[in-house]
Length: 200
Image (cartoon, rainbow, N blue to C red):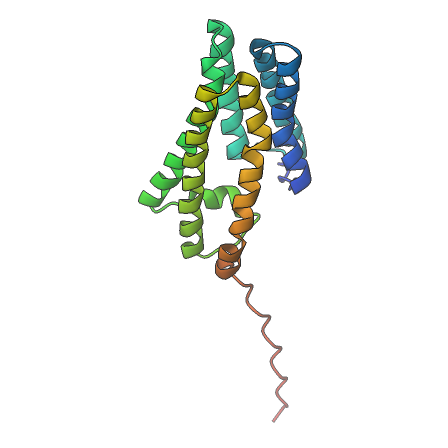
């Protein structure tokens, strides 16, 4: 039996699949309440994951983890009728990612490389620096989520997830361009064809 090779998803499609569930969650929240919005978010995440799997014939580690966390904390939110669980989900999610990245450095593993190696080809120094910066970003997002949901309304918190988190992440990657350019592994130049030796 032949195994289908994984395909590469366009970056624009990936961004839509990542952002759409959050957007749908926000719109549903404005029209109903946090519990209906949570159920809709869970369904939207499952649909996004299914579309991603249909395109790439696999789920990326990040999307798999995001799906598990959304379903787990969404289920807790609905079971206990307590919005606390869905609100702390981004804090838990980002904290775990930050810890995993730093733990990978301790174990001499670049987990970020597993996720981004199809987008970037960096040397070990580049992966190490980018990993540390990404871990700091995740910890910052975790703290920011906690501050927002504990000090502002549910609607403001949901809006922050769209108009705050994604611009922060885009800005972060823009500022990483010099690092990526410095540590990108350049392809080896093609060797020149050896001259044909004349018969003696």
